[in-house]
Image (cartoon, rainbow, N blue to C red):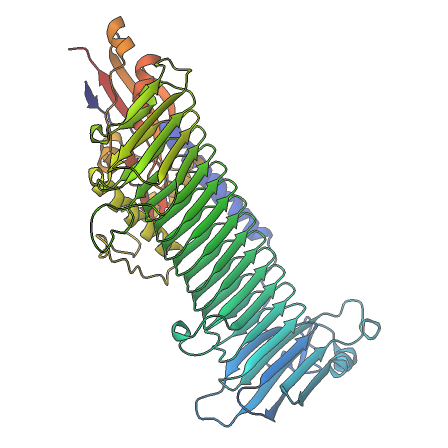
Length: 602
């Protein structure tokens, strides 16, 4: 049996389709541009002063002041409207709080003057520090069409605590040396370091940051203690957290570079990505992807539909997906993994005891899949008891390295359950494998070294793409892996790149010549010639349309040519393939191509 492939080029119909799409898009944009009103011109300084009378001009006023204080106290700012920006005093400056408030309205003439004067701004020193409040004029005092724009800019000492509450507006802050309590009803929150200049050296267990918005994004550089962050729908992105982290969003993504304490991360539908954690991690997403780098504690992860990928876990692990695949490239403790439809791939590699000898899992482990396969890689010196069961499919659905001496029991027909056991190195904690209709494959760690390293590199690259600040620090065989985004594979001019991008949006991937596609394949087991086909004398070509997913898995989209009996064997083999996706614009995109097998009797 040989494997051959034939070049496939874009059809003329596809080129016409892309051209027509481009033409329609360009015409649509052109017509929209004609119909749009002229952009609003920039306002001059004269128009921004109180009483400006130019048509369409806004009237404004600026109020400012300075209050003497002491470092280590608290700024409390509350406003019913307005964005807030917090700055730090320059080093060595006397401890004061400086504030500037820009108040603007679209009202004109005397009405504008009266509205600006009716805006209530209070600034006063207190025992706890400084208090600032801003209040709009009462509704009865405003004309029906009067609108306001408020901007606070406050400069505080470097060790000040900050407590800000705005009903409408963004909150932005430079480094905050004390604690931060920031709340907005709908804007974004963005800060530098919170809690001191050296957050990684600070002890955990100290509440430092509490951030809340009802719809915007939250972005924090570093926190020298614990953080609690909530947004009703935006993304949450944090740097290095010295203490515990509780991050929740109603629908956006959650991303963290490093969490030193316990982590509780939750999103209704977005992805969760964490590069490094040092303690227990509890994550839940309603349907997104979960990606971890290095976890030095235990993990409990659950997703309603996405996949779960983890580079290395030091403690016990429980992961569950309703339909996605699970890929764990180093598990050193007990493992509970379950998915209803995806594949589970796990490298079991406990730490070696100081006195040498066999390695062991601390407790029983179980991997459960519905229709997906279970692939487990084991060290040769693992002391464990293997217990594997396939509910339907027969004994051919359990594959193992002969050195494992797997004992298989069950009927050979396709409907009966099959059970297999093995006692490795005298036995140990049970490793139970359960699949309803998939396959179970057991191999040794050293049989697929290149595949494992490739998967780890891909995961590091994936995390680095989502978290640009992340720098991998693994001490294993891929310590020198390049965490930067790989260069684009599509070296084209701007027009070709544009067409490729359109094809990706329409088709969900980029088509590639089969010969070029073969260069991307990292692992390609050949199909077995079906015994039934051999007996019947069946031979010939099988041609499949395949897609390389972003995580490197290869799925078969459809059968283009070939006998169904031969095609089943080809499809089963391709499902075990792994390949590299194409990179374009700094992110992986899916590849669509064809593969051809030539089944010949000799």
